[in-house]
Picture 1 (cartoon, each protein chain N blue to C red):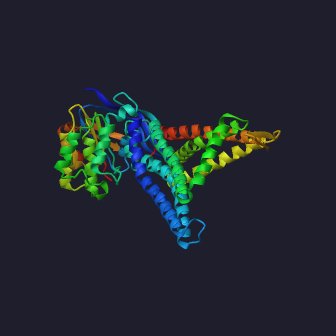
Picture 2: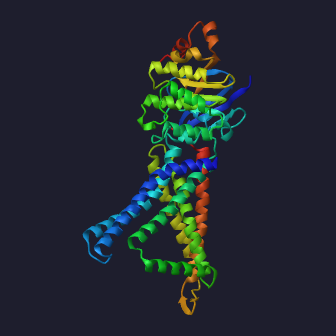
Picture 3: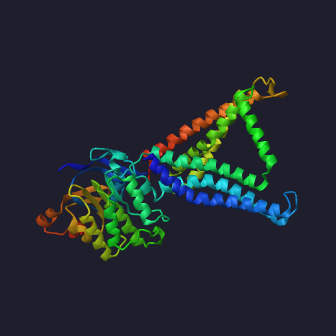
Length: 232
Length: 268
């Protein structure tokens, strides 16, 4: 398996606060990986670094062999924790925008998903509920045939029924060779779809292992192990 | 990609600016109708006076708003939540600056054209058009003949460069403001004022150094009319310094903005 992401000595400081401390990480293609940790553990910082929204204070980060830039943005599909949609635009406008900028965007896939979720493409973003906006963003992100998907808290703001749909969408809409990195603290909801987990604690990786190892060798669920590791 | 970025930026910025400038022209038309109904601009009329006042206010507001709006659009699409999309597009910061900057410059030029159009709608008549035509001819004459050609060219270059410099100063200010941990907009305004003060100090010092020149009168001849102008040399020097300073500001503004977007982007 080829490596889609490699970090060496990756650190990020915000003033005096150290958000990531010399992280060494390697992710293989074709895996669904959970990036797990409590609030403030550095999950979002790592995802922002991957997407070039932050610059590392130290260390290197390579995506498919390239530093974050135009080439990596062509192959990374990113779902941020917040809404970036322009409220005055219609859903169809933003679909056209993605078609124009991302060569890997599959318009028919987006159309199917919108239909299944009964989202009218002619609706303006401002007339949609918060949950529906999040679904639109997820549809945009999962309609790309990317090599690496970075999903930051994809299920935090939606109801449990929608969570199931979102997770189904994630599983059913990615190519076998693609990697999905999901950051969340709602572990019990996602653990059934994960191949691998990374525990982040105070800006450092405290564990990176296959989910099967946790289940077989430690006879625990990921959720139970998380509660044990991050007990307050 | 640059073409696509420009297309979307133009569309997004123009939605608001077209409406605003349509209002400017509409008020100009109302004012003119009111003047015509009352029998000319010289006739006293409270309504005409009020419409003229409103027209001037709206035109001035539109000009100021255009510049601020373009700067704010840059801040909003790059450094707020919308930046999560803008900065993850497979494009370079340079392409983003150029596409947004070009839209801004075109709108500044359009704003000037629309202001002129509004003035013509309100007070334009045959005599005004004839006078304008004469002045355009005079300027064209001075560009290629006579000893004020240099001055005329320098003025023309200044006029062309100014909107570009405005844009890049604003973009650099907004980018510098984004480095502040809170109050990013206030930081942008502060940065703009800082850049303006530095610019004025450099201008003042340079003129103080170069200003002590021989001010031999220059003879300007247009047809059979001869005029003697004093201090033309000094004016040329000032204009040339201003152009050099404007170019420096443009380059520094561009590279500061590009550097911050590439190395110091900090979306929180």
